[in-house]
Length: 135
Image 1 (cartoon, rainbow, N blue to C red):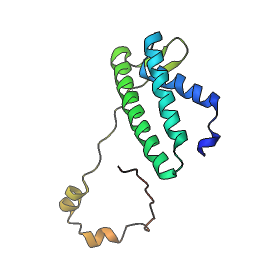
Image 2 (image 1 turned 90 degrees about the vertical axis):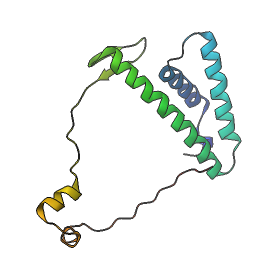
Image 3 (image 1 turned 135 degrees about the vertical axis):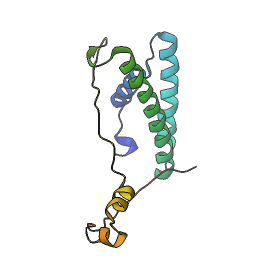
């Protein structure tokens, strides 16, 4: 999606979601959030280089991810497991127990499996492309 594909309505929805996830309420907080969002959108829209756009958006994603994680932790601690409603939206909180990972080094040592033995069972190599913004 190019920067020009983002229309005014989607920016308003983004602001609404950002404010909801950030837990902002009240006129002063809303004004601050609106100003910050307008500045962020203006920064992205004024950038003509895709690499610079990636760096700005990546920083915003990291900030929102951190805010979202904190909010999720807070909600889980406050409400526990179940379904809950806010003023406009709902949330479902589930708690799962997952098994830990297998320590392959210890497993191989316990059964005398060598690195050469493991290679016989290794699947085909795959190409992985990573793009990360840097300062």
